[in-house]
Image (tube, rainbow, N blue to C red; front, side, top):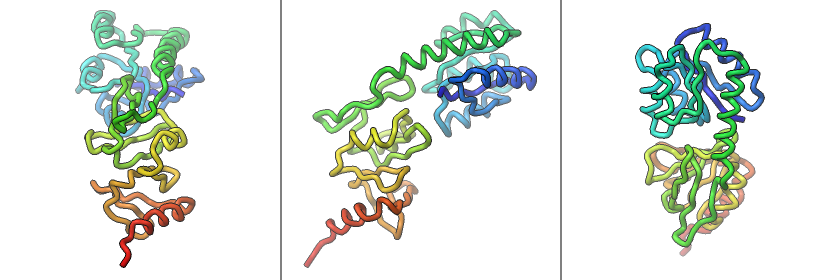
Amino acid sequence: MIRCLVIDDEPLARKQIAAYAAKVPYLSLVQSCSSALEAKAIIDAQPIDAIFIDIQMPDLNGLDFVRSLSNPPLVVFTTAYSDYAVEGYKVDAVDYLLKPFSADDFARAAEKVKQRYDALHTLTDISQPDSDDAIFLKTDYKIVRVALSDIRYIEAMSEYLRIYSDAIARPIIVLLSMKKMEERLPSNKFMRIHRSYIINLRKIIEVNKNHVVMGQDASLPIGDLYKEPFNAYIASKFLTR
């Protein structure tokens, strides 16, 4: 599913576009937003694959909003002003819908989004570790190299993963399963401690009852299914007389 936002300051237009999105089987509408600022908070908090956004809005218009994003999702502009078409394509918009548009017009734009989305996700999302103990990850429509030694922990959230790295301020978000990530990471350096968490064993700061402290206010729970292997690992590290 392609996770999307509808962004429009006009309530009737927002409702209509949301209704169109609900009819497209491969779109999952996360939220309808009345402003770019509201949308920004959502994009910062969770992965969004595409946005259908008006251009003329108070506070921050759609064009400036897209330009402000370091890794923007796929963009379809929806506007009553044809003068913005050229500017829209300058920011690599997938399509440009001139209001008023029909459900069929929206469906055609959505299909273009799907084609772009599918093309961007045909590559393998994660590589095997290279000779320098680093992996390549496909995220935000680009490929990034991540050193295994920099990874603190990995968090699962639905079909996406957040990868927390000491080298990057914000977590890296990838469309990937925990199982696939486990298969790629060396088991002598990483361990799954919960259905939602994989940790770098060398980054453990403290073990406190049923939690592992990984630094930077990250206290992660140890799941019941994972306690035995984790406790065995910790026991193997104790100094003996």
